[in-house]
Length: 299
Ligand code: UTP
Image (cartoon, rainbow, N blue to C red):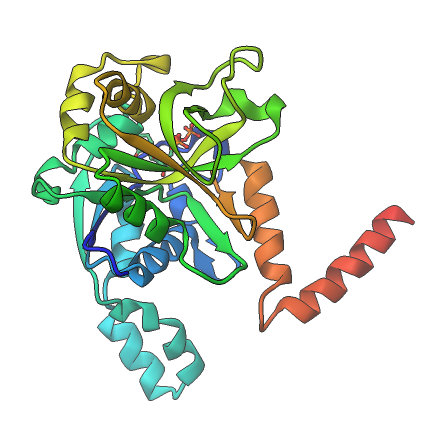
């Protein structure tokens, strides 16, 4: 079943302080994972789910994201003249069918605040939110997490559908954590808690970078006060929807799915290494190189 949800919002305005100095003057969403910047993976994932309109919520130091998705006619001409077909192929993403829109978040007041900038764009219709600093890896068949979120949202007449992944218990205080109403891969949310202590965490199911919302999220975002760190937290708005009795569902990543979070150096390095070692062109050589290096380091 293909979804009628064809619009998506990609927040990319965050300061990325956990990745300084790399992110001082360039967006973390433009850091490469293998041969492509992170945000290109996100756009390609959304396009493959049938998204035709994409709004980037951007901020200062983020203009390279806009440049990346522009068609660069001069560069193409230069590559054509020099007959560099392989490099022209690397620019194929420029002809992605979706339309791109951009809006500036005026101050970095949190993810919830960034999403609130999408109200006019979404025209009172449901929309996907895909964090611009997170890639979804999928190593199994069947529909991906965004398609499953859309399907859950539509068939259950939900106010929101949110992706969750299981995390080690000791890591719960880094995430929004679910209190599921029942077991299963799709569950109604009884509550959601932003960054709980290990003792207070209602589960080890962590919010994971992909969401589908109906338009009522915007009213909830207006109603909530600033939360942790003085920021408008998306999780707090979701919690308000739940408290109002609105149906909010969680969908678990399947065993073949994983999120690569590019928000801190450890997970960025892990993501980069994994993608490069598995790369169809460079992987074999990089695996040999890594094996030799490990031997040398351990020896
Ligand atoms: P993070 O929670 O990782 O925050 O954002 P951050 O500000 O980018 O990074 P740190 O904590 O300073 O290291 C998750 C996603 O939400 C976007 C980010 O760009 C990222 O894609 N975001 C965050 C916004 O668009 N605006 C904000 O005010 C905050």
